[in-house]
Length: 181
Image (cartoon, rainbow, N blue to C red; front, side, top):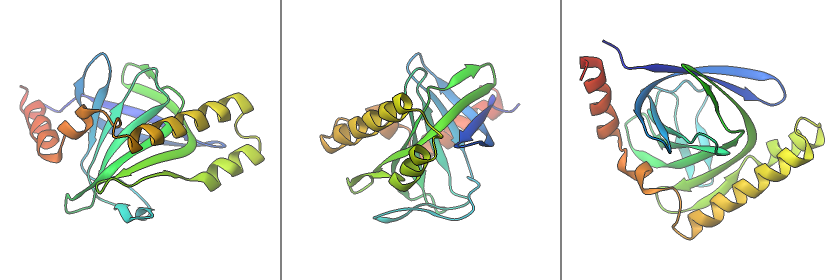
């Protein structure tokens, strides 16, 4: 038996759509935990602290229905935890196994060492300059990114459940689901 899967239709401005298949590990009223054993990337993702995610590395994702972000627990291919990454995005529309959202360019990084930074400012500026995002949506994205970064600097974000889901727990849950438990 295989774990339940979702297809996340992830729109990047202006009109690129990627579809990600992810195993659902847990659903609560506040969040849904999904897992990718080996992420497909063209190259490594970096922040000021260095490489934060490599092609083929595992990622544990937390989706929050109704909120303007998700959170990924990022790792290197060897499983080393590098930190938490929030995509600022439109609230995910969930329709059964199909999920839809639009990336609003800004991302918030909280490294394993505690560093906090807002990423992809250039992408956000380009989206605004080219009119790919209306002013109200851009303002909401900026407020949300700034709020997450501020809360992270205060030690109030990401929430505790993000840290409770380490790789060993995610992989154990995946095995349980595959066995039909």
